[in-house]
Image (cartoon, rainbow, N blue to C red; front, side, top):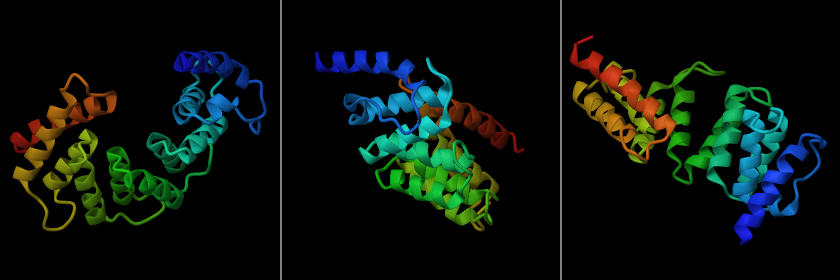
Length: 204
């Protein structure tokens, strides 16, 4: 009963929030519930049922992160990484990704690897990126597995080129993405891994 009441309050409150100032708090049952405030943030982030508002989305994600939600930590980090609602900031993105990674969140580990592998406000560190792709893959993240396979295939970190390890990592990503429980990120990683594995086997 309590969950049904909370869900009803959440659905009735979200449209009205579009008319509130960004400093106005959500109703306490939502504001103090990590899953509920995360959902509100997601609605604002994607414009689902309310006007898209990155500022409000980020505020909700921060609150959910304060309440211990690891997905919210990851979302705040992503906002800093891509400059959504805030200026792009590599250092802040890494701080928040590391907080999520510390809780064993594989996508955050993968994102740390992506940041280290890019020229986003810094010099690429391919060996550091490889370390984090390994951690992500070990956590069961298909995207981390796909990136790990790519790194082994290309040998971006000196001395790590290995067709055998590349095939293994790419196949693992394909297997994860083929599960009935796979999410969209897993499925996209599996598709990318399948293409890369095909190229690897063809000697391209």
